[in-house]
Amino acid sequence: MCGIVGYIGKRRVVPILLEGLKRLEYRGYDSAGLVYIDTDASLKRHRFEGKLANLEEHMEALNVDSHIGLGHTRWATHGAPSKANAHPHCDCSGDLVVVHNGIIENYHALRDELTARGHKFNSETDTEVLAHLIEENLDKDLAAAVRKSLKKVEGSYALAVLWAKQPDRLIAARNHSPLVLGVQEQGGSFLASDIPALLPYTRKIIFLEDQEMAILTADSWQVMDLDNGAPIDKEVHTINWNAAMAEKTGYKHFMLKEIFEQPLAILNTFRGRLDPETGQVNLPEAELDPDFLNSIKRISLVACGTSWHAALVAKYWLEKWTGIPVEVDIASEFRYRTLLLDDSVLVVPISQSGETADTLAGMRRAKQFGAKVVTICNVVGSTMTREANGTIYTHAGPEIGVASTKAFTSQLTALFLLTMLIGQERQTIKPDQARELAQALIELPDLIEKELPRLLDETDRLAEDFTKCRDFLYLGRGCNFPIALEGALKLKEISYIHAEGYPAGELKHGPIALIDRDMPILALAPKDGVYDKVISNVEEVKARHGRLIMIGSNDDDNLQRITSDIIQLPTVLEDLNPILYTIPLQLLAYQIANRRGCDVDQPRNLAKSVTVE
Ligand code: AGP
Image (cartoon, rainbow, N blue to C red; front, side, top):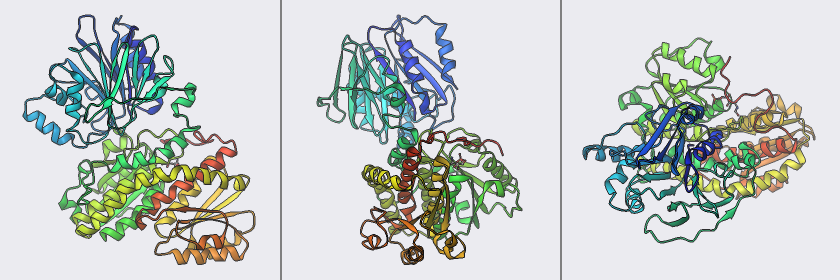
């Protein structure tokens, strides 16, 4: 997610912008820039690839006397990290600039239209279309031009705009991407993507909501409806967080913040890629042409850790909906074993970081065999995305917690989209099925959003009884077996409790010997095609006085008969249970680790990206 800071007031703006961007660095970025109106009334823009320090060093040499400006740190989504793609972006005149966080879904069409009307583009970003669009609608009033322009924009944005010809104001607008305002009694108005940037100057914060815009001047602020311009009364909140808490927007850990960001991460991953009416999927950056899609003989999924669990789930989806055989490999095995690959094989390395050594090595080997390599990755411009033939980006935003959460559910979302793309092209998914799959995915973010607060409470209560356990067993069947693995990995990596995930049907082939009153057994039991089988496995545990935790469906009265430790979830399309059922497992691991006083965000011995063998 990008970082935005803006200020207008009596103070010098550059130090405020740099300090604010520094306090947003935790969000992750790959370039930085700022803009201000100089004493000659012209806009001055300074942009650098890489760390904020590059921009800071450059600005130190300049003695800028300006009192209005915007700053930005970019987390690349469209266009690799570079100075040309760094924000702020300007219009053709150079008198108007924008900074933006979010995804403009229809930017291709807008860019084509604007280019046809003579606009010259200087970046690969989706953001730049906003500058040229506003330029076209500029008359005398910047706010009116912004409102008129945004009516043509589809997608998510936290947007700030500055125009040299109206140097007494900043315009801000928000839709599905956070943006806050800050105000000072003695004058001075601020805007930022997140509260930490403003805390050194004010604790008086106004939260913009979706489809709201604001006009900020040196001694006033007003908020209005983006659609009709009607004024909106807004509450001014007083924030009592310290800086560390503010980076986590009040959550105790980044992991918890990122668990709660999953609805937005899933939404942003399918946004602009899925037609809600037809279910049609488009993944242009994957570079998968119809001829190749119809020629695929085998699919090979390669990953490590949590990303490998995503691959295991995708095997169920791809084989069910495309009829193509799928192999799944742990990358550290894949890179050394005999590989039988050729140009009829689609190899999909899956990686949050795009830098995991084993997965990268596996990808390079696959390319030597002439296989088509399309990576699923969360970091634009990472090594894997630069070396693959194509990329499907997860738009989860930077994941700070070492234990992967929102990146995992975003990987599953991207893999589900890939499944739909291939199935639609090979006609193994019929149009009515495509619509059903699409609708189920589209409804998922809101459903998870609604369940999260209850699940946080229920896992907190559950954790009380299990914090002292030394061993855990997680059971699942079918496409939920990999979620049992993921739940076990989450618990072991942040609480240091030994945990194993097992196919429920494997219980009697060994693990049943482990059952005693001390080892909790968590079973995933949604009402799906293998529900009865899971229940019979669970009965085997119950008969041996095992301690059961059941994660099942809201409408399943059977669960109470088995155990009192239950978490129940809404019914969704069976294929999407892996995404939904991951959430309580993430939270249970978090609650137990937190109670054990573990370093949840930076567990011992672990790195966020394993860039060595
Ligand atoms: C997940 O919680 C772990 N942090 C780890 O297993 C991780 O998934 C694995 O190292 C792969 O990382 P990647 O997705 O960046 O390639």
